[in-house]
Image 1 (cartoon, rainbow, N blue to C red):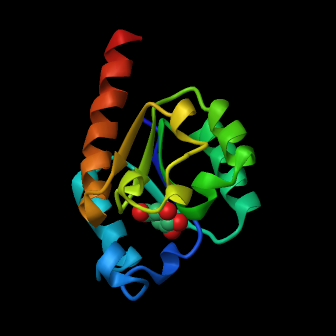
Image 2 (cartoon, rainbow, N blue to C red; image 1 turned 180 degrees about the vertical axis):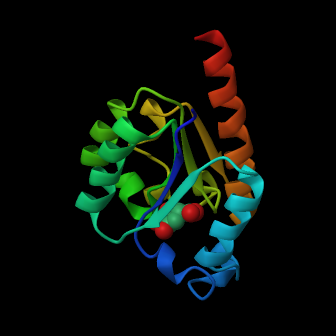
Length: 149
Ligand code: DHK
């Protein structure tokens, strides 16, 4: 029985759709969640957002026990949180770090991610379309891991 994919979103992403639309687009986070559920085609998804660092850490811990994969957009915590990095290090399954914008083409403060060294893959710059693309990639990685197990 496959376990859910956790899709975790960091600070300010609750304002997606109105927040800096020239960078993040006009699609809302609720619409992004629907796009992920469509792409998952029946695979269980847990989709959450928080502006609190400790809450994201608690959800990574929950995923360690209850999940098969993590897709995480840590937003600004990407560049500040060793705590979230340390939590992700404990996760035994595949992890995709996701950014709506291409962080490497932005100001230097957006270039050094604490997460990239501990994740399986990074998706950046595909806009909100990056989410369903990451979901399909995650389902393939979980299926591959299951056949190799
Ligand atoms: C979202 C944010 O909130 C920024 O702090 C990151 C990321 C980029 C994104 O592109 O999804 O730098």
